[in-house]
Amino acid sequence: MYRVVALDLDGTLYRDDKTISEETINELKRISDLGVIILPSTGRTHLELSVLLDRLPFLRYALCCNGGAVYDYLENRYIYEETIPYGLALEVLEYVKKLPVYETAVIDGRRIGKGDEKGEVCEYIRKVAVKGVLPNIQGVTDVKEAYAERHLDAQKLLLYPAENADKEEVIADLRSAFPQLEISSSGAKLIEVNIKGVDKGKALKDFCRLMNIPIEESIAFGDAENDISMLDAAGMAVVMENSTPETRKHADRICPSNNDDGVRKVIKELW
Image (cartoon, rainbow, N blue to C red; front, side, top):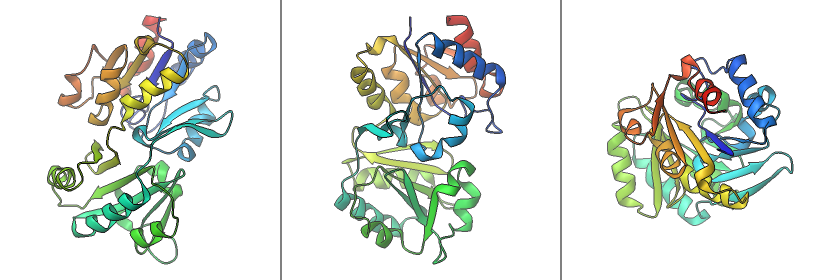
């Protein structure tokens, strides 16, 4: 039986209106009470999951930053973290100034992003970013300069392609310029940058190793291309009906969409 349930959030656990049905919450609590670890697996930071934790107070761990960190809420610490070295992050932030993107950086769970001297994030990021992360973004006039002052490694960098930018061209450019980085996408207007080899799949494997749980005893749910590594790593890969065509290729099974409580229906069937 599966002992870890790794859940992507947007497009998977969350419905399109960013809510979770009461029936799904009840099913997750039921299997949590049986000893199953529910592991939210997201690009968000540990500071951006307060609403989820309010709805699912039985959660202890979260796989964050697209695989760059796993946070333990009971002990208030990272149990796993792989970052982009400070100097390399500076290089990338300088390089992307010439690309049609709006850059942000994540340091210790907090974000800095393109904005103004009052700390307000720019209008474009407010328009395209997931609304739940906006309170955690400090606006700055120059992201590279603001990041340089921190003198810390970056958990990840996020780039929002401009209105008319070709996201795939930007990704290809970055992969060519920085082969030591992992470049992925979890949405039409989002490019995620981690250190090479870091992704949700590696983080899930390392989490299971830390918990002394065979990776075969994990099940992963996802819908987007940044979930593929996690789906490939898990003992069972469940892909949402609303997934991208590429993600669908990596499914052991397809479940109903996020708006049709697909996660709940599979859990109820398996347990």
